[in-house]
Length: 192
Image (tube, rainbow, N blue to C red):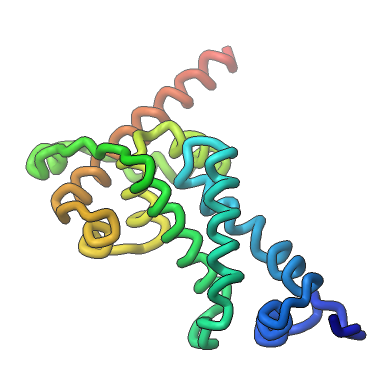
């Protein structure tokens, strides 16, 4: 192992990647420490609990370290890491064989959603509510609303129809709206 005079927290991603590929444990720890916190947040949005999120994170970082040589410095390194973590989360959803409830798309369009209700919610509170959603709703909501996937991309990733993706999103929003209203009602009761 080489002795480096420059601390890893002051080097660019390219240098860090090269050192990780060469087997430098200090560089590998630095890479993990740099990105694990943010990626844990991603994992928590897809998992039902912290333990499952940690499993996704661990598996995702194994893939990251095994594929570092495939990163071509095109786009952001953090974006590349995030994509691997999201794909790992999707794989976990598939492995769990969660059955997504299918709602006819016509019925999904009849659901009235107040989008302003999400604006007053703290991120940590939204995360708790997301974890209460059925897996199908949660996965589609995350992919569409947070990751920016199209319904076509979601359908392909999850091996479902586009209409199912759209209905899952509508039901997720509707369910979140109901959960938020329940939280607000409970807070008002506690204030009295």
